Figure (cartoon, rainbow, N blue to C red):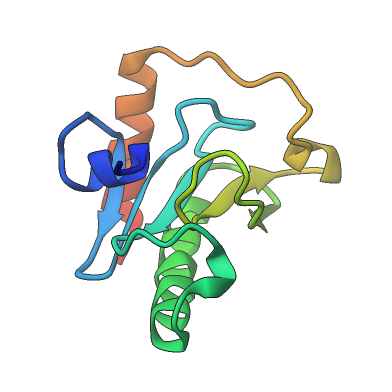
Length: 131
């Protein structure tokens, strides 16, 4: 059975997509820790991040860097934190989290509840800032 991320990749379910190339896709987390919290996902469905082939791993990280640079242009924050946890969805992914303090990247924090309009607006802004 395909993961929820594969369903977004295949456009079977909607997602707030901010960037995409032949190998990866980036979209807003629907349960964000902070505004702009983005997931970077390989299009190849691999459960464990470190099971990615070297080439796919490298391409995913370089794509994540591009997205993080665009994200930082749009969201007022000190840094873009990255996290690879991999327990939430059985599909490798990188969290890009705009932060101003270490506690902003604490996954135990309550998640934001943003409206569809706000999520769409944030996605549009990030999409326009990603080179």
